[in-house]
Image 1 (cartoon, rainbow, N blue to C red):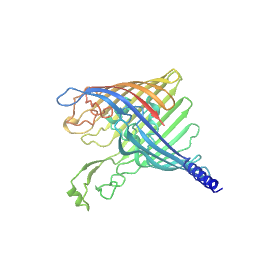
Image 2: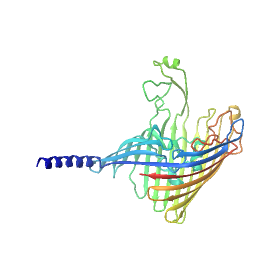
Image 3: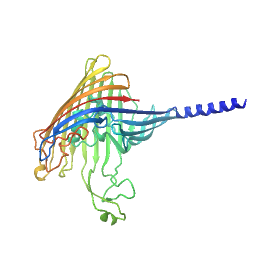
Length: 404
């Protein structure tokens, strides 16, 4: 009898634990590929830069390797508490960077929408990947050129996610969904040992508004985003920091003007082929030595199903950008273009094989501009083969992705 009571008690504890944890999901992605990359080095000595080796999906692939936890708790009356913690990993060498892709908590209501707080995808980051044949992949030339054009917010790269954010997503009404986000500035530093000289709390704040319309095969996205009072910061000595009441290195920033961006994109699925396209424009009110003060980026693409489990993806992108400044050789405008072609074969709903080739042309410009590579020279594929203006970069990779 006593044994039966003990057995029932253990079963009850196990059952209670399972129920308590049933609303938490552990998920992740492991993405590994072989990469061959070749480009002109952009160095004074000239020559080509070549790479051949393994890369993680964070650098070159379908998806970045990650481990995540997400869940929800019903609070009653249709209201739920939600959370997401998602860690970036590099599976090719086992490095864990302590970088959270996402880390937020929020409330969700079917009738009122969702409010979330923390590091997360912006209103733009939620949508940009919808209008590309290969989404956020680093093979996509449009994604690469967003860094060239100085895009701060409407970007499929690192700016797709932002920290210190409050975001609202509306319910969907007749196919329309609205989004809004505001990211508080971290200009003042993240701890009491960091100092800003002359900084305002609204410097480098970011906000965005977007509208998404989805109806059957049609998707259309419109986004407006802004960085307010963009601040360019440089480090100063610890001695100067001590004068402000502490011993760490301080940041001496120059308050600047706003950066404004517009984006419109869409996709239509004809079943035998799906078409994609987008256009985005940036206007940067700052004209420091290395600032891209304006850019216009457009891309078009298509995907074609091959059998029941495969698809071919083709993407072309073109960007024009300018620099309105008065620093000798830096007075240059530019144009870059590139294409990417890929094939993906789904072995299951969670496992896929893929292969991509891309070619990126950095325009007929000099190899470097006073040693500055941020103006189109360093838009490399995961930091591998860095090409400069006037040079071409060619990449090939094939890999395996598994999601769980």
